[in-house]
Image (cartoon, rainbow, N blue to C red; front, side, top):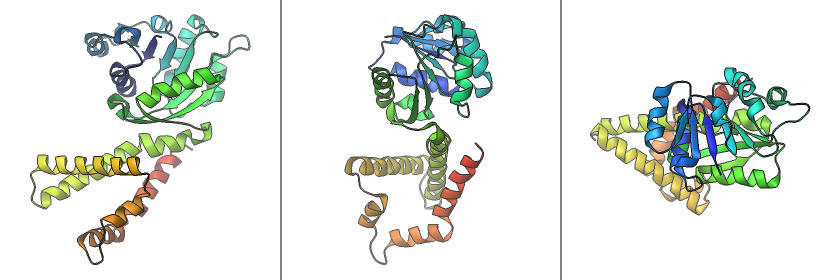
Length: 263
């Protein structure tokens, strides 16, 4: 099976990196397309096929469109006649583009190729994305193919189109929010006396530990917090100070502010 990625920007490039590390596809079965040759040099060195022609990338079994929303229509119009609607699968990674729009752009004499609206985050490069998938006109086998692909590149969730904006805010924007916490905590570590590099290492490992603990035990976060919170101890004092400064409220307000921008 062959897969292509049209668009080697931040997200397209991250997707390509994840695929190159995957077991699902051989490197030579991955094609990356972009009009800027310089963006393709790295992927060529990694063993992927590269091209500046979208029509060449459109020949893969799975064709992924990973470009800015305002040029989705242009790219689809460019490759539409090259697609075999009976044999190929289309992945569209673009926030804010609706299925109604896509259906109109893809319509070919009343036929529409099976496609998936997909929202990953940039951790897909490290095979650690949280990816939201909305199948459109796909059968069970095609859905399994795509979910298996994104499960290898992290975790995936089949969801409704109406929740894609919320998913973008919670996981795609959310990765930036998580990094902001890490940065703030590392800066606090420097104030506590650690070198900047030491503080960053401590915080990232601590966050990784918290994530793995929750994933492997299925504990509710509050139950895990209770395990390290003793009466009158330093943990509860620190937590209460953060809450007094509006920590939980700030996170929720940030998420809702991000979501409102999609309206």
